[in-house]
Length: 237
Ligand code: IPE
Ligand code: IPE
Ligand code: MG
Image (cartoon, rainbow, N blue to C red; front, side):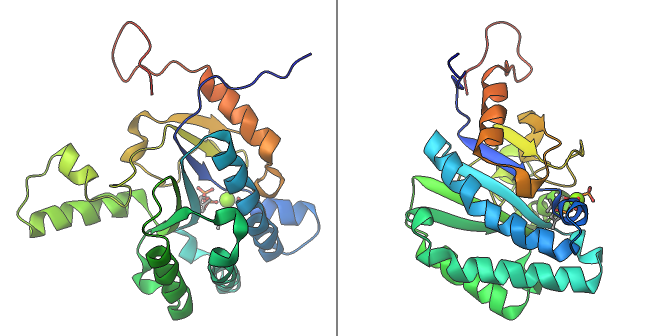
């Protein structure tokens, strides 16, 4: 039997990469080991997603609330992120990909902050593919930040103006948000942008989430009818 493939590909996919800790525990390892294996999965999925025709990928890597975890785990996550971004530009799979990092970067460790800014600057002219990684990110905080900036600039508070002050201003809202790891919640990810995103939840833990699992999400998405509050014929992307 021929494999059913997705007939409609979302342009922008968001992923809440959850389940690293449980994956490690299940494998008799420390939680931080789960984050290492999870980080190794990132480029596999990024490559697969871009090959599938997705043009923007938003990955939730560290929430504003994740600071409240034990220091040992937070430190390990900061080290893993630093290693990831240090290798970013030499990674052939990520050639031509624009990097954007969303979130309050001011409080990140100096080395991590610097390598992020450097990579963002180096990839700023790439247009076709965007990789947006959310670090120290919270959807509520992002909205507050946008509104504060509008007030500072004496601009009107409208949905369009708020949108234009979000981290996603240049590349827009996710068509599909995938959450791995079995929880069915948004956990402060893209609250404003996700108003009409399609949601896909899977029990598969992030380190086990592979191309075939991503394809299942795409297939599911291609069968959804997006209505945006309107009656009648399906609205195209
Ligand atoms: C997601 O995995 C990664 C981060 C939140 C940084 P978790 O660490 O939340 O893994 P679980 O949910 O405890 O399994
Ligand atoms: C959401 O996962 C944040 C990331 C995946 C980075 P969490 O594990 O922090 O979310 P909760 O605590 O289950 O809501
Ligand atoms: Mg979790």
